[in-house]
Image (tube, rainbow, N blue to C red; front, top):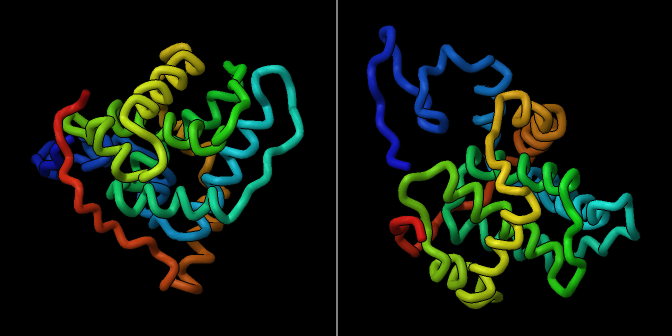
Length: 203
């Protein structure tokens, strides 16, 4: 989605929501300022693991949260140039998937949940987003057909329930504010967003 600044009641629109900032609570505006840093990524990874364990029919044995998965998330966010607002929406979808399920528990289950939520969030919140072929290049793990399948399966899991409210986002406020606090003590952990893959029109 193209960001622009416009005057509404004497002030700018918020670039993440494209409505006037005064419409939002101070808590949400604070949340949108949380940088995508290592504690934020760990929060996302933990959320994915819990969702994978739910599977729609109660808790199963938690899949192992491996450094490999964390590195995958780090790399995807960095190479995809993902913003805080997109990642917050992806978190809402990751959480929502627990309610709908079941999630097919096969190889790469955590990566599939993460990518499904991220791709759907990116396309839902932006008029111009990365194509599936770009996501395949970014992950260097899944092919373009795999990405398409992951997206379709995740939409089915959500029953196409993509609406996101302010209360949905604020569900993660406490955990992410703690992440921001940790980051401020070690600011070097911020993930540089240096995607060399140009965004294109949605698929």
